[in-house]
Each structure stands twice: as structure tokens, then as C-alpha cells.
Length: 307
Ligand SMILES: NC(=O)c1ccc[n+]([C@@H]2O[C@H](COP(=O)([O-])OP(=O)(O)OC[C@H]3O[C@@H](n4cnc5c(N)ncnc54)[C@H](O)[C@@H]3O)[C@@H](O)[C@H]2O)c1
Image (cartoon, rainbow, N blue to C red; front, side, top):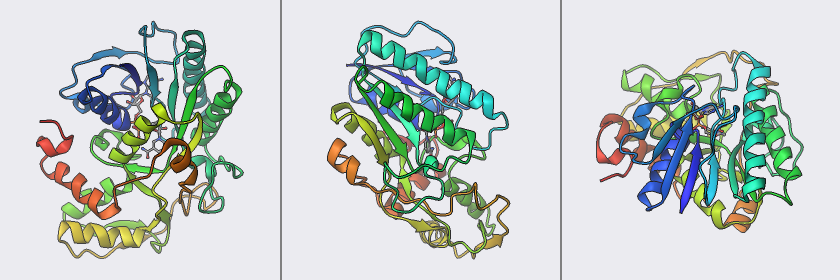
């Protein structure tokens, strides 16, 4: 089969593109390299188009599906209007193309749009979009619904994704990556007071599999999380165990307003189980062990499973 992966030089997109290629598919990547790394695509043999997808460009013909991962992904991006214009504008162009050419569209949404709503977060609960980033993704979900009869689409609301190929993201990379960086230098892991915030951390390998499940699933919008919440304090305990360290948390005052910072994320996973046949398989400690092995030996086979 032939696929286009937008944002394919980014974190999740590169893992997906490489996995599709390993499975024997023809894969084309489009990325404007606004927050990507060429290194993420080491070993990739498919076509690579350097292009901002919010501008018109010749989309390859005869696609079996488009996996849309491209987006400005920094929730604290300084220009909210530009973010919405690019994220929503690019998506609109893909929807129009998919309608015209009858191509299925699988795209990345976010759990960020639930804000500080009740947990476990269910797809239909009310949304609390406190950032331009969350608003852009909610608008994408609304557009996908609007095109429901015309375009087969699956929206995947990722929770907190971590894993190999995220280092280029800098500040918006996962907390697991940042804490590991501090701890490997012998520094105490810095977390917000008093470490009781909770996240539904999901490994990128599970997220890639959710995208593959979407190919044969029912159209709609789905949470992609594990259904297991971990507090920042517990995360530090796990990291200490995996790294063989004994570093106590270094608590500091949270610099963000409680209204805009998500204190607790947790996915309800029922809809994804029923509609996509997707259930996360990686427990947090096993996933972190797998991930940290790739950070210690960055050019080893373990990094991406390639032989
Ligand atoms: N990582 C997470 O925890 C998480 C959580 C929820 C949702 N998401 C979503 O998953 C998708 C992938 O995120 P990621 O974590 O891999 O981030 P990332 O920043 O590594 O990947 C995004 C990629 O899109 C590219 N890009 C941005 N705007 C573009 C444009 N207009 N045209 C072409 N390329 C463009 C960037 O260069 C980058 O390679 C995004 O849509 C993001 O919103 C990620």
C-alpha cells in the first residue's frame, strides 16, 4: 500500500513512517522541518517532500491513506493566530484533497482539549480549550465531523506520548525525557509542588499501533491513552528504579496558572477498544526501560527496532 505521512520527520510521524516502511509499504513523508530532525529518518528510503502543508502542494497520487501528524505542537507557541491558521488551514486542505480523491484520513488530535475536565476523560465530555493549540485541534475535530459523510476520517486524541525521536522537540518533549536528562547528570528531578499531578503517559510504539488500527477501524474520534494515570512523584520512583539511582524530587512552584495547566489527564479507553480494536500494550516501567536503552546507546539497533 502507499501512504503519506505529514510531519513525518517529527517524533511520532517518523516512528510511524519507519514502521510502515518496515511493514513493506511505500511511504512518502512531507514535513516543513519547523520542529523536526533529519536524524529521525535515518534509514528511511521513501520520498521526502520539504513543504509547509498549509500551502498548496502536489499531493502524491494513488494513496491508500494519509496519516496526518504535522502541526505546530508547542502549547506555549507565542503566536496563537499563526498556530491556528497553520494547523487548521493545513488540515482543511487535506480534507478537501481526501474528499476529491476519496482517500482515508487518519489524524492526530490531542487530549489537551479536555483541559481540567473530569477524569477519566471521555470523547464526548465538554471541552476546555485553554490554549490556541488545543483550540486548533478541537477545530480540526469539528471539521472532521463536518466532513463525516464525505471523508473517512479517524481522529486520535493522543494523551502524553514519550519515546525515541522526541529529543528535537526541546521544551515540549515529554517529561520523561526531561527528567531522565536531569537524573543522568546526577541532578535531582525537578517537578512541580508537590508532585501529585497525574498524567496518562503512553509509549510511542503504542501510538504507532493505534494509527495502524485506525486503518481498519470505524471512522470517528478516539482517545489514545493507556487508561492508567501516574503521578509525577510515582514517575520519579519508576525512573530511579530503571536508572538505578536514588534521587529525591526537587519540588518547585508551578509557574503556570492552574486554569491553563492540566493537573490530571486520564483516558477512557473504551471507545478505542470497541471502534479500533486498540488497547495500549506497554506498561509504563517496561516502556521507560525500553526507551532509556535507546537514549544510552543512541545509535544501537534498540533505538527503532531496525536491523
Ligand atoms: N507528543 C505528544 O505527546 C502529543 C500529544 C497529543 C497530540 N500530539 C500530536 O501528534 C502530532 C505529532 O506530534 P509530535 O509530538 O510528533 O511533534 P513534532 O513537533 O515532533 O512533530 C510535528 C511535525 O510536524 C512538522 N510540521 C509542523 N507544521 C508543519 C506544516 N505546516 N507543514 C509541514 N510540516 C509541519 C514539524 O516540523 C514536525 O516534524 C501533532 O499533530 C501533535 O499535535 C502529540
